[in-house]
Length: 218
Image (cartoon, rainbow, N blue to C red; front, side, top):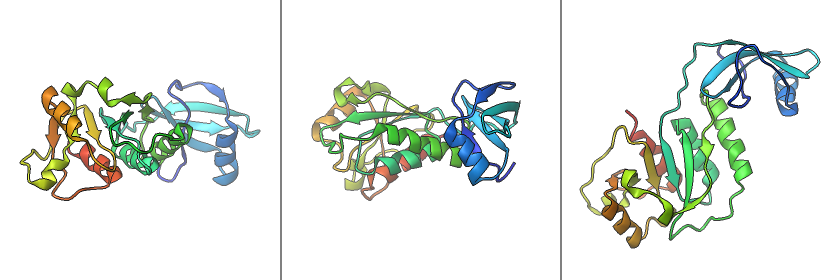
């Protein structure tokens, strides 16, 4: 079904439903794409769907065989100036959920989270996923259970001998533009968190997030 539009219609859709057509969806499918049929997804599944001729309703048809490409990884991250790019890339990499965390060096604390929701939805539509990752309520670093975390450890760039991956990990943490503080590194180490190397250079946070996710995928 290549080149057929894909639209997220929420996590509760199922075969056989007829639902009111959101105005933006009706405009996109009927006016922009100039067609009635499209693929609707949500909750990990994808369905053949049809926009009615009056643009008022959507009929959810058969479930397709397309499997969800998302992975079981939650990305913990410090909001940055380019949070939109970070979430876009991490969504394409398959992240299941996002946990924003205020760290000692977080500088971008006033993020338009409604806009971020739209960005991850569009990234999921584009990247052939059947689900949209959740953006969880923001937390402080002190509230995070570090014992189950794999984190991007920039100390590798300064000679620390660290593993290159942690396959199967479920929680991945990347820091802000200025990196984690000494106290935060000490907290990671005390909790037994696993630091992994992303290479010998210091990466921008949005790129670090995408690479870190790739280092834990099975």
